[in-house]
Image 1 (cartoon, helix red, strand yellow):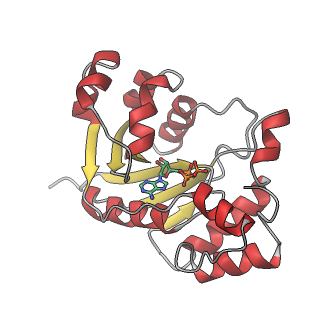
Image 2: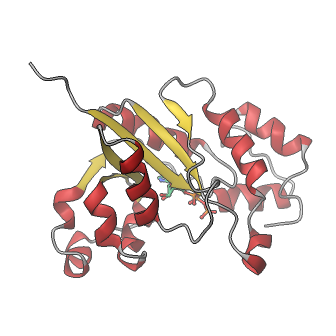
Image 3: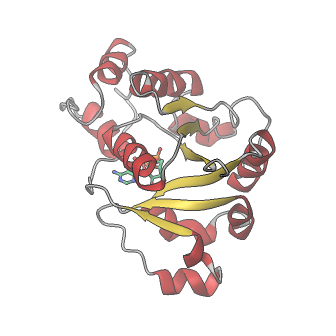
Length: 205
Ligand code: ATP
């Protein structure tokens, strides 16, 4: 009898900050898709000017570590942080496949990301290396027939993850902090403490 394949979820994002929407997606995807591990893969700092809009990678990495540290199925992957850019997901997944040739890869994303997927850099290439694990997100209507027109056959590569839909976003969290409102229960307590201790998002909505 041959062993069941190892399945790894690669969860890319800015994670500025990581919130309960991310954790719900990762945990439910792990269950639904039978993932051995979910690798939280923070995006590198964007080049030059846009960089001001995103917290520096060391803060985002630390917050991801705090958010996932009590979950044995979750780990941090530095693959996009430790190599020079640009950091296209197609390259990330090709490298990931070289690192883990034994594994079936799933790239995890929310419904808004799937809706925008046809506009990504070489989206069809991503599907050469990974299936997509998608969690629906309030407000993001997905019309698969439209996406199929641009990327024929994509539907066969998509697995929808059954999970409670939750309307938390990093943007809203940053706005709430900017306005002095509570973010309790939208991020883990440790992430909330880190944000407060480092005075993050006070000025950046
Ligand atoms: P921002 O508001 O800054 O755009 P975000 O909350 O979308 O941030 P990202 O780090 O950009 O967070 O998201 C990483 C991935 O997690 C994306 O694929 C996104 O669709 C997904 N995601 C984030 N929040 C949710 C949510 N509440 N439900 C489902 N998917 C989500």
